Image (tube, rainbow over all chains, first blue to last red; front, side, top):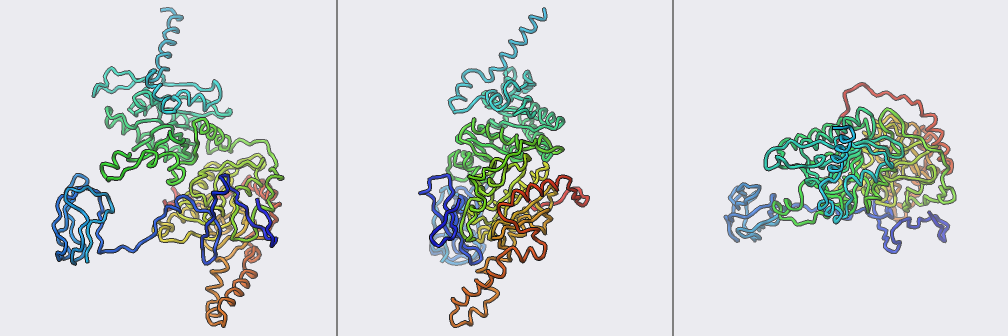
Length: 123
Length: 515
């Protein structure tokens, strides 16, 4: 239902079955126009995109770290052996995707890590 | 043995099987807040209408100590009955019998009743409550699932298929519901997932509860796997019954007509629902209710992709499928989920001879990296495909904004709509005034002494010239600009004229929709 405001312009009253005091309208911009609206659950949970930082090396599969082949401060080349991770019942050798100096190691041997876990950082 | 004794023997045999998994298992079932399988069927169907078959089916498994083990009905109840007089076939997995696990004979009972439903051309309802495959029966159990999936696919678009998830439905088993038309879930009772919390924890190290992973709320709000959400089994059965009243028994006939009723005009004043300012929200369901018989609207997937509304209503006693942008949520934009939601519903309506009424009020597509990377191109294409392909009567009413690609996608004339009507407040344009003015008059704006003032002026000019229904009406893209209160009248007439619609598609095996 709509009501009229002072300017005699029709504005929408929140037509929500939930407690009205809890309803918070947001603004969404489409092609420069700003619209007053509510957000859906999945929109609220959306992840903001970040440019991948190739110097931060994340795990692509979850598993257990068997061996770390480098130490902090060590200089490495692209293709050098980085770690061995046991995942999906296989021992997987991971190599450095780029070269550089190992700035920090965030994992330790025998540690169980999930997917997308930050393992190493290059300088 | 006299016949009398034989009858007595039958009664005793029946009595035994009807106990299902026995008192203890039933107690457990009740403790979980669940009804038993037989109670569910009886509650859902018309009184005394349920007729059970294959009561005495027994499993043939011999390995792993299954030899000699008695599983009543092999853990599933099958039969026929009626809902408000409509004949249906039904099966319900009995969790009290070996956890409702699916073995060979269990699956055979299901496929048999499915075949029966296909032969009789009546809806099939499956109540799922099962721990999954009966491991002891090995590959036979997998065969059973596969044969169910095959039948689900063959029956798709021929008879309505309804899945009611009233317990666990995990692993491969969950693909049967996914192949059916409508999935019903109940808070705290339904659990659906491919890999459960245990596996996820051991393999991925991620800890999550069953409810958070695949509970009723999750599937109704986040995944879009469920169509109807209820807080109790009773509420769920009411929803199933209501749905049955709106849909036909098969694709060869129309849904049963009801007595025509006028909308509740005093409650839903169609002139006053949509705000004049195109940036202000409102609930589009109120517009639907202002049009339908008795102002009744049966919404589907109410909690998922809420920026588009789909559901059934009746006009002049006959079922109509509604698709409407919902400005209340995300300004009514199209995105991955809303395109997917509407496209499947359109295909449902088309398969079952249900005319489609589309209400348009959207600013376009949802911008964002997440949308682009989630494939809004191919998902959005589903909507174009579904509308273009559908040849049931298709009527569009443009309530307010219809900008850009969104205008085309929402059953425009160009996708072969039968009627396109627009309200006088409609703005049919290539994009919103701000965006359009910024592009068209970029030079004038940047070179002006007071760019902001110039911009405002140009936006105003654009609005006056293009933000209306008459530019589109001048080309015949809109058949008629109508007053809101004339909407029902135009719809009634349009549907009446469309009754013998013939719109033949090119001969092909099948199209290749973007899914």
